[in-house]
Amino acid sequence: MSRLVVISNRVADPRKPAAGGLAVALGEALNKTGGLWFGWSGTVTEDGAPGETELHMRQAGPVTLATVDLCREDHDTYYHGYSNSVLWPVFHYRLDLADFDASYIAGYRRVNQMFARKLMPLLRDDDIIWVHDYHLIPLAAELRAMGCKHRIGFFLHIPMPPPLIMAAIPQHEWLMRSLFAYDLVGLQSEADVAHFTHYVRNEGSAEELENKRVRAFGATVVVRAFPIGIDVDEFTRLTHASDAMDTFLGMRAEYSRRRLLLGIDRLDYSKGIPHRVRAFRELLDRYPENRDSATMIMIASPSRDDVHAYADLRQELEGLCGSVNGDYGELDWMPVRYIHRMVARRRVPGLCRAAAVGLVTPLRDGMNLVAKEFVVAQDPDDPGVLVLSRFAGAAEQLKEALLVNPYDTAGMASSIQQALQMPLAERKARHQQLMARIREHDVHWWRKTFLEALEKSQE
Ligand code: ADQ
Image (cartoon, rainbow, N blue to C red):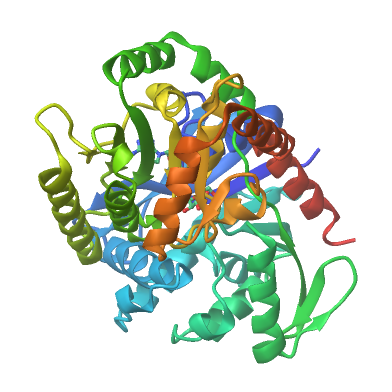
């Protein structure tokens, strides 16, 4: 059996309780056969030279964790710069927020080269390599240039933009060409696959071959959608554990006279959080029966606070929440409760279960796992309703949610009203169908189908 080598920007210890389904799924796969997990340690050193760093090796059960530190310049250009100020905004269609500083690309290439250089001596002949996300697009090309002949797969956790948006990145052709050094490229949705195919047809004169193979730039790669899921059994267990149940009962007692609407996100401009507050305001304005009743709880955990666009977002959001509370609040009712913090993972299912409506309304999102977690946490005999943006990757699968356009404030307000008024029988029927699909395509299915496709990719 081949050994699995996972490479991602950050590395997690598979023996510790994982923060999310992804770490669980990868940890589980690595634990099975033993494996290697390689990436950045999370440490930034003030004295190192760009592209130079030491490798730290640590054993975690059967899994070897291999990490490198980044010097300040590499961190600022590769991580903050090219990854999070160019690729993240552009891949989420936010050209207005991209910072195309010419110095970033050198750092991005340098760190990918350094990763390849440090990884090469650790590889064994029978290894199968799985690279994750937008920080590491050129990694396979760098490994191939150093003679690596292994099977290498890549999974993109964020959306693939349409060709004309992609073309705004000065190095777009180099990035897309780099993907052809992989054997398998996995994307979240069929829409992402269509964007990829359009791009390579237009810019790389691609030929589409059988079995999802695409030939362009003188190479062939398999490109498929592998919609990522959550660990349903683990999340169900968390839902019934005492911390989640205490949270649920506490919230239910506190809000016994109210209907709760819930949003849980990282505070990121892709998540459409201000749009959600505007729709809630519209709901209170157009459907006054919700005043003194509906309460929106928004938990937005701090994220990349040192990038400008995030500070602006925080300010905008605080202003919007303040004005809704000022205009509509009563002495004993605050319409919006905004919490700029991370909630403990073990409490998340309790919060979800207490909510009548889950608001997952990104402007663009790879998948959005919160949408799936919200559904799994519900009581099947009295489930809440998921209001989901049509621009989340999850919308391709979760068709029984109420799909909304977050840019259409009035439309979103009327969908929230529909959710609040939905009869029990309809809520149960929708929930049942959503659950079946989420269970069928859970995170284990995702990992297994990706790795099987990678095994077969060179046949
Ligand atoms: P993210 O943008 O981080 O992930 P998402 O998939 O929605 O977003 O959430 C990841 C996890 O973080 C979930 O388990 C969620 O419960 C947790 N989380 C988010 N906000 C939280 C908060 N305030 N408090 C506590 N927990 C919180 C990226 C892509 C997504 C893609 C995933 C996986 O942007 O589109 O679905 O990777 O591929």
